[in-house]
Length: 381
Ligand code: GDP
Ligand code: MN
Image (cartoon, rainbow, N blue to C red):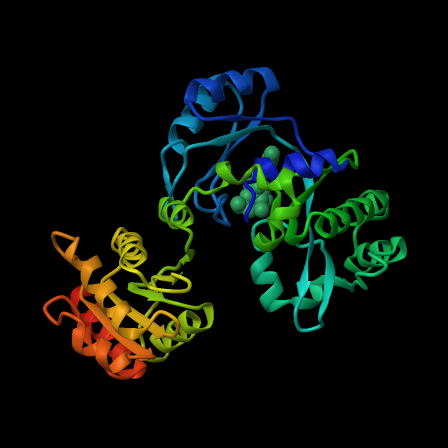
């Protein structure tokens, strides 16, 4: 689960990390009022789950009420990399001399959490990580002991942070690690930590992602969930109880079992296509669930073709096939060509039952994926 910047900042502030004064606004009037109360200049920031909002025009500084109105008008309702902005954070602007990067994540290669600091913070940290990885100081953490204070100081000194602010930055890193650990974080990031000319240290941006599988024991974070989903398709899929992730391609994918769906994604990529989503309908493939899955995938404007990859186990292939037929019959029009691959128990019977007026049946997964990729290419032209 990804928190919005304003939510992550609340969590960070409660733990003692300094953040600017800020108010959330959903209308232009609210934004202008909030700016007046906070005092100018303010930064007006789109609250959507995309990185690089600054570069994409989702962050504007305002010196007075007129500029605040103009900025809020521009940003509220704008499309930011496919997401419509319905909330802005109005925040006291920070006059900074330096921008640092501070982050905590799991280093899967090392099998350990890693705490990171860089003086090359700001909007280009991804490029820094790719081109100049040495510019990011890293300390691996033994989770049994946590981040030792000396490790936090070492990361800060290795990164080359100015002595005047080193203590404060180390303390932010320690707090961030503790939060990441206590709240089952997957990624925690402050980019930038802004340094002012009188050596104040302020978290000007905040990313906090929490492991979905830990939400049952993170009730405070879980409560924020209703506010976090800004993707209509993901919200719909959540409601139907699917594991769903929206991707940027045009081949819709539906399967039962995470491994099966991942394999299908990989094969779509292998055959030159681009997956539009991950959708695991889970065990069984009764008509109702298949219908709901199709509704989600068909609702994605990017989708040009759909491939089903179903393994009949306890739910036998013939039942699955009937489910797919019934589900497709419920749609007045089928907006995208659908290809089905069935395997497992009674798959042969299933393939015979499938209504070939509605779907294309392929015997192997390779053939099914190639067909879906070719269909998508044709439709996209
Ligand atoms: P991101 O682009 O989505 O990562 O959003 P950030 O919150 O990190 O903001 C991007 C950039 O906008 C920062 O690195 C700053 O250069 C600028 N910015 C954001 N807030 C302020 C602010 O309060 N004052 C000033 N001067 N610049 C800001
Ligand atoms: Mn940022």
